[in-house]
Amino acid sequence: MRPLEGLRVLDLSRILAGPLCTMILADLGAEVLKVEPPWGDETRGWGPPFLEGESAYFLSVNRGKRSLALDLKRPEGQRVVRWLAERADVLVENFKTGDLARYGLDYERLRALNPKLVYLSITGFGQTGPRAKEPGYDAALQGYTGIMSVTGDPEGPPMKVGVAWIDVMTGMMGALAVLAALWERERSGLGQRIDLALFDVGLFALANLGESYLLTGRPPKRLGNAHPQIVPYGAFPAADGFLVLAVGNDEQFRKLCHLLGLPQLWERFPQNARRVEAREGVEGALSQVLRTHPRAYWLELFRKEGIPAAPVNDLAEAFQDPQARERGAVWTLAHPLLGALPTLANPLRFLSRTPAKPTLPPPLLGQHSREVLLEAGFSEEEVEGLFREGVVKGTAGGDGV
Image (cartoon, rainbow, N blue to C red; front, top):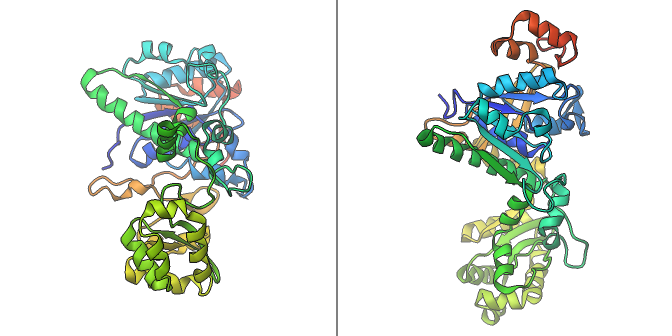
């Protein structure tokens, strides 16, 4: 038994934030139906890498779902969605503001059919405000929200985070919002609309940097791998690569200076605030010593003394780490084209009684079109008509056409 078993989710989203949200719900037991246009979610074509025509991007966030390939621009396709929404608990969409209203699939009209529906709308800027109609892409939102201004080398250009950071954060916030609305529905018996914007999530996720600006009125600057309020805290060069030091208090810094043979550094800068003021000199002195030995030497030494430190791993090293293997960081699923498919395990897999678990592999485009419509109560004749008219599509290897 998993916590969300019996929950029906209608997923009209694509790209990253929405699909990540619904994959989290699927891992927790929800039945998720992914409604795609006949040409598929855009990320099916985003690559390389591709394996047997399937993109790594699409595979990364669509585990546990069934796919219905449906043309929403056709009245018959809109009728199918309304029928499915009447029987759903949750609908997730990330169309531009106002687009679904043109198809009669906006919240107000679906709420009239199903007052208990929780309707999550994910957009770049939300349903209100001067930018509400603008599209939202993670790279642009990293620019708008200021995260690029504090990422990168101080002397270099602004940098975006290496993954679509705001999209990922928004997907997780979306899952949280859905669960909150479902819990409230237990008391009121009513669903509600959730207006979730990448812009809002990006500003919220600035955390201590955002609060620092609000208190001082001074925008933080780029510090590379350094921390704006703690020294030493960041990446340092060893003889054969980089390691991370995360020295969070003065006692740890005292131990570090003792191990590195730098007692004078401790004597001059025993308080963190003074080290932040003298950042360049402190970090330079540490770097000069750390370069003299390989990182494995230092990491073992720091581990024994309780000084927080870590290697700067590439992804191969990260997934081969004994901790990743022991904790089961990869779930392997049987894919109809790819065979054994490794996927990123959900970190909610450690609930003691109802852990997240993998179910279906990421679907082929339209793989479940026929079975979904028949299960929803459409007759064989109606389903054949939808296929014949091109409103619905299937795929070879699925239930076909």
